[in-house]
Image 1 (cartoon, helix red, strand yellow):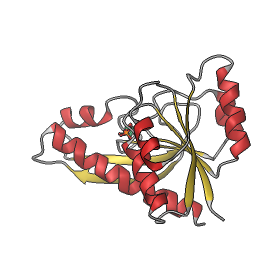
Image 2: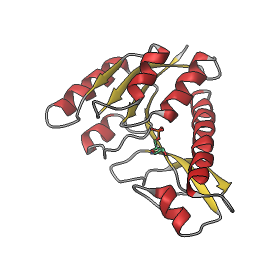
Image 3: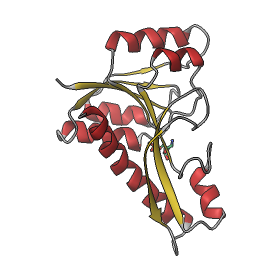
Length: 183
Ligand code: GRF
């Protein structure tokens, strides 16, 4: 059985692309059924087109929230994967899909929750910057941790550090999903 995934993204979509590629290359026994973006100009849309993945836009506001819940229920995915999704999900959503929503965050949680985590760790002169995959609850980057790794950023400039962290993100997200769906 091929696992079904739904991905939620707001921006570039490099994590979405890493997962899409792993599915295409059969490194991950899963199919991304749908990409949902909450920004009309999200670059992730170009990646969906590139991989032939269906996508929809929804602002996750008011009644639209319930439309999204119904769309996802209809798909009944194994996991809902947040990949740079810059919106805190409402309790209703989290409760409906409890333990099925996972997120990636570029820090060694519980350190540096929230926005600009890499920059804050870098400016704090941390030698290592982490990546965490965790279940999503109603808080911001507070859910149960599934996996965590760090990279050494000593001697790198911010741009190089960001690149190294993103590379780890792409690897860890695919590896973690693989472990989750193969149990
Ligand atoms: C990643 O750093 C992810 O950890 C964070 O948002 C960023 C999204 O990047 N939640 P991308 O859109 O996947 O390129």
